Structure formats: C-alpha cells, structure tokens
Image (cartoon, rainbow, N blue to C red; front, side, top):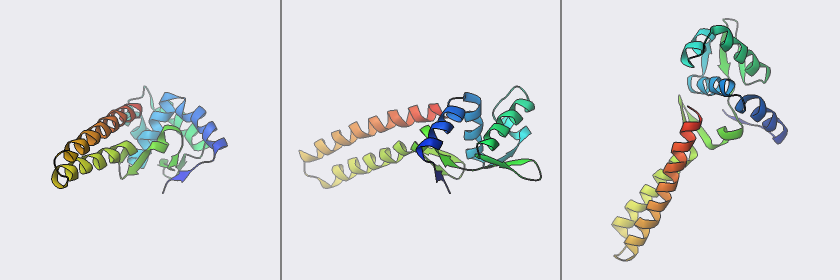
Amino acid sequence: MVLLVDNADENALKEKVEGEYVTFKIYVFLLKVGQASVRNVYRGCGLSSPSLALHHLKKLEGLKLVREDKNRVYHVIARKFGILRFFYRTGTWLVPRSFFYMILYVSIALASALLLPSGMREVGIILSAIGFTTSLVDTVLFMRLIR
C-alpha cells in the first residue's frame, strides 16, 4: 500500500528527504527491500559507517517514513512524494511509469504492423517509435535519479 501525501507534507518531504542525497538513497533502498537493520542499510547503501546509517534512519523515522520494531529492524512506510510519484513499487522493484508507456507503444507498433493496410501501417509504426523513444529516454533518466 502506498500513501499519497498532501501538498504541505510533500514540500516538507521533498526538502528533508529528496533534497538530501543520502537520506533519499536510504529511503529508496528501504522501498526496494521493505525492511532492514542498521547494518543492512550501511552495507546496502555503501555508507561510511553504521552510525551514519542510524542517523538517517532516525531522521526517516521522525518523518514517519520508516518505523523501528522491537528487534531494531526498520520497516519502510511507502509514501509517494517528489520524484517517487512517477514510480510504481512492484515487490523489490521501483518501476518508472514511463516504462509502461514503452510497452504500450511497442504494442501499438506491433498492432499497426499486423493490422493496418500499407500506407497507414508506416505512419502507425513511426508514431509508435517516436513515443517509444521518448518513453525510453524518460525511463533511463528516472532510473538514474534513484540509483
């Protein structure tokens, strides 16, 4: 389940999480794995020390983006804000919305190639190729932002 946030919360989250690279990197890591200990976060994000991981986890906990259980394991609370509004979470994957547009354009190109008469077929394929290309560029850019 992913919670949407209102505008005031979104601005605060953008400033305090998305605006700080390490905090955002840890939140994205937790979105992918679901739950992790301080040591898992330290290793998974390639941080310089476990205390740095703990500092950012406490910051995320204060923003109600993670919760700590009695075993000191942090569980992510998925919320959509900032750039994360353009992603879908599927298991351990964060998939940009533009990826699904790529699939749509490929389907349209295939349908155009198989079903349309000559003359219209080429137009359908060309328009689909343009849509596919722009969606591919967006997908690559979005994936670079969350790595």
